[in-house]
Image (cartoon, rainbow, N blue to C red; front, side):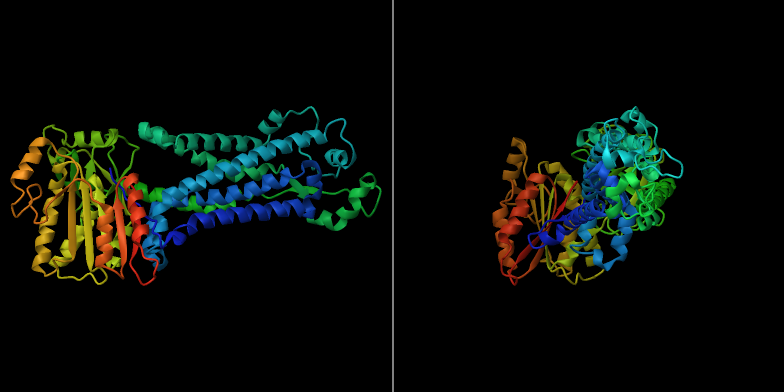
Length: 573
C-alpha cells in the first residue's frame, strides 16, 4: 500500500517548512497570553478573581486555545478542500504547497494542542469548583463571603454558582450543562486519542474508524458547553454604577450606600460554536462529496498479478482527471464497508484509464489480492470481480519534479509507484514531441531486494529509453537500478551473461547494479555535473534511508548562493 505525501525538508527551505507549525504555536501562545492577561486585569472580573484567583485566567485562556484548535482540527482532513486550494491558488505551489502535504501531521499536532489545553482547562476548573465551595464555607468571611452570598436576596444576581456549602463537586458537575458536556467532551477526546495510536490503527482499523466518529458528539457538546455560564463577570451597566476600586472596600455598605449599589453579574455568551461552525460545515460538505463519489460506478478493465505479491488494477470512472503523483482512496465493501486505503496512481494523465499497483502488506491488502485472484487462486472474470469505490484523486506535489532544472528521483521497493506515473507522463510527452521547459536532466534510482519486482517496471523504462533515443533526448533520463537480494543460482546466471549488451535481469541497456548505492559518490558526481543548479531530490521509501539522503542534501549543498543546492522532498508511504 503506497501513498505519497511530499514533505520539503531541504536545507535551503527548512525555515519555510517550519513556518506552519511555528505559526500555529505562535498563535496559540499569543491567544493564551493575551486572554490570560485580559482575565487577570479586566475590571469586570475583579470580583470573580476574588473567589477564583488566577485559575480564572488559566481556565479562560486554555478555553480560547481549545476553540482555536477545534476550529483547525477538521481542515487537514478535508481532502477535497486541500486539493481545491492546491489547484486554484498560485501561492500554494513549490515550498508553500508542500505544507498541504503535511496535513495529517498537522492534524496530529493540533490534536496534541487540544489535549494539552483540555488538561489545563479541566484542572483549572477543578480548582475553580473547589474555590467556589470555599466561598460558601461557614468560616468564609470578608469580601469572599459577601460575594458568595449574592443572589440570595431578591433583585440580586449570583456570582458563585455553588449556592450551599453542602453541595458536592460531583453533584454540581452532573447537574449543569457545562459539567455534563465537559464530561462528554473529555471522554470523547480520550477515546479518540487512545484509539489513534499506530498499534490500534494497524490491528483494528474499524475500532479506530468508529471511535474517531465520536467527534460528532465532541463538537455538539463543545457548541453548548458554554451555555451553563458558570464563570460570570460584572455587567457593563453595573460597572458604570458600581465603582469597583472604591466599593470593594465598602462591601458591608453595598445595600445602604448610594455610591455602591449591589453589583450585578451575568455569564459570558457561548462562543465555541462560532469558532467551529465554518470548519464543521466545510467537513459536512466534504463527507457529502465522498458519499456521492462512493456511489459512482468504477469499472475494472484489467487485472494483472505481478511477482512479489503486487496486484495491478486498471479502472475507469466517469469524469476522472488526474496529474502525475496523485493518489486515490479505495474501498472494497466486500472486504470492509468502512476501510478506505490510499494508493498512488501509476498511470499517466494521457491514458484513458487510471491504475494502481498494490502490494500485500497487511490484512486488508492481502484480502484484496485474494479477492482478485492474485495469490495463486484461479483468475476471475472481470464481471465477477468485487466492487470497488474510489475517492479522489488528491495530492499532486510530485509535479514539482518538472520545476527543477535537475531532479533526482529515488525509490525503494513498491515506493516506485509514484514515479511510474511521472515517467509514463514523460514518455507520452516525448511521443507527442512536447518539451519540458524547466527540466533538463533527471536521475532515477530504484533499490529493490527482489529481481522479480523489476519486471513490471522494466517495460516502461525500455519504452522510455527507446522513445527518448528516437527523439534525440537520450541524455534527459539517467536511471540506476540496484538489486540488493539474490540467491546463488541468480548470481551464477548473472556472472555468465555479464558481458552481453543488454542487462540479464531487465533487458535494458543500462546494467543493473548489485548491492546498495554509495550515496556519497552519487551526490558528489551529481554536484560535479551540475555545479550551479537547483536540484530537487524526491524520495519514496523507509525512514532510515530518508535520513541518509537528507544528510547528503545538506552535505553537498553549497554555502555559496550561486553554487549547487539540493532540495530534499520526502514521500511517506
